[in-house]
Amino acid sequence: MSETSSCHYQMYMQLGEINSSVRSTSLKELEREMATPQGISTIKAPHLNSTLFMYSPNCRLAIGIKYGEGMKREKFYAKAVNYAGMAGTSVSKVSYWTIAIQVFMDSYLCMLHLTTGILVDFLFIPFVAASFFSFVLVAMFGMRYMLVIWRIQRPERRGRRNRAAAAAAAAAANNTATGASTGAEAAAATTINRATDTMPGGLPLPVQAPRPAAPEPDSPRSDMQALYGRFYWMLIASLVTLYKIAISSTRVQNMMISACALLLFSFWIPQIVRNVIRGSKRGLSLWFVLGMTVTRLVLPIYFYGCPENLMGHEPTKWIWGLVLWIALQVAVLLLQDWLGPRFFIPKKVWLPR
Image (cartoon, rainbow, N blue to C red):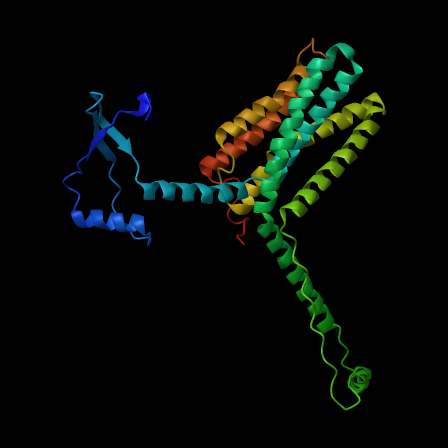
């Protein structure tokens, strides 16, 4: 052995005492429940602490710990299971379109910085660096989070489609039943059909059962292709629309820019609607909501509120209306967390499904 590992240690550890008011039977029930969970009610697990002493006779070295805290292995595994279970539940509360709109905004910023850096030589390096960071935010974080939300919420969308298809089939069956003829011509037609729907030996032809609809593929590759394809097609269509706006008159430009800004900065509306539909709250953390709101408002306030901005836009008072609009959305989200997701809807109006 090397000189650095030639010390031999003897370790002595003493577990801390448990409160005398805790009965041994209750402690055994707790140990049994932690080893094999059955869902029974037990006492709260007491704190696990110990005193540790290590001594090396040949190196004449002593190490002591008077009070050390720890966690039982079963409790650690239970915490890990709870964390894994909370991941899917928390994602199911997040609105897909809230994240999608913000990813769209980041993609526009990426292309705006890249285009400006290419057109203006002395701004190339800083604007291309900003474009690169926006691209990383979109491609590595935003799109992946959208994919996770898409996959977690797939059963919910499939259930809505199945219920809609069942309702449509029931309506079609009712229409067919009410539209059936009861006259003699219908009876004669039925007789002819019965005669023709038989085999030469007099046996009826086999009835073909309707084929069930093909299930939606669950492979990650198909999900990624569908999500990325849909996202980039919408991005290209929006870019074409923005180009048409750019070559229009000044009045049309101002109107369309105001409409696009109002639409893009309504990204908390889908989350509010999802909270109402699902009856859930705290889908997004408070710091995330406040942080994203402040950072999203920095650029529009700078370009439309600062008199000496980089692009030379004249300040307009309408920007403060946009600030009030998104502040109202944040206030509704916070009130949904505190007062309930449907606090602004009368009970007589909302009919639970």
